[in-house]
Image (cartoon, rainbow, N blue to C red):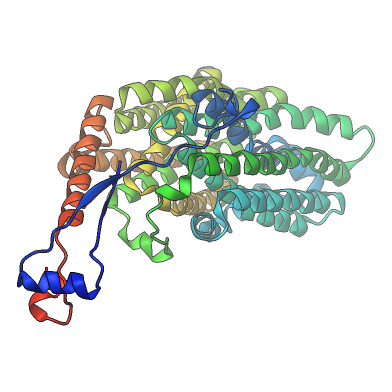
Length: 508
């Protein structure tokens, strides 16, 4: 129910009536204003499948949101799936090869944050997703052309353009998820969107080598690499098409749900970043150091498994990609469990500890790596489902695009540095030292988990790590406090005669 305060008109009669009572408070009437009737849908639009107010429609839209990032991540790990072939065909070493990942990450040190701000303030989610999908398509074409014409610098330039859109598209997907599922199934949905997108990498690892072998029957050397990458680029069209389809569904939902009526009218400014709480920066620290031990490991994993565990290239690719296959299945289950139990920080800490164990197992033993990689897939699912939703708990929804953009920016700075450093470590010291480096990154994430847990208990009533019931109780208390404050402001009597200092409303 919406309330308003009826203000007296400033005509002579009213002014005289007010003055006749001296400086007494003028009566203020507070009357309820009925909520506007919801739009009446007819035909197919009124069915449970087409009505955005119904859960069934939300879950019909979910595959669109999830698969927007699929094409981007399918092409992201193209160099990883063809590592040996690409290095041989292009005549490069491991350090040069790592540049293909580093230059994907470098633009996103800044552009992910800018992209998140553009989504919040300029483009909006819908148009932003389309623009960033277009960058992904163009970047992949340039990357493939570099291989076809045997110009490694052009391949690096293509990865740079690809990176401009890649991570900002991920920010758009996260913002879509918060807008459609906050307060409902957000943990499950964010975990699932990240896992489906990363499943693109899994498909890539299982498809690219056979595709390269087939292309090699008609093309030799660097041309085989370039043509293979160009064919793979067709997957990026999927991201663009789904972004356009999602534009329609989200625009329709905005009209039916009257989202604009719930906005505060506050503008988003890039300077708002300075007011983000420390808990957000701890989440960002966990993110960058944890993923620095995952994605660079995946990019170097093929050769590691071939050399240490004597796998074939195809088997090494399958073992590397199993992280994303398990995550695809486990993420919705783990996400629903977190939605039911709460305890997000506890889930994140358990994920980090499991990942430490997996890397230690692969570094210091010869146990079948499928065991460690399978557990790593579960740990990856737990972190994705528990960490990313906490951003929406500590940052206002109107700033979520900017917040997710900052996390992506810092993450990409870390990934760029780690990929470059990782290539140097492998060339000079080998894979054992690389694994020790990954373990050190995970230890930093573990420390950040402990810090945010302590801070949550001391400053936020245990909200982030609270159970579902605890979170609901805290949210209810905060809502009641906000309503009380708003009610007190609306019921504060207004004075007449602003020219009279005794009756000036600014003195109230």
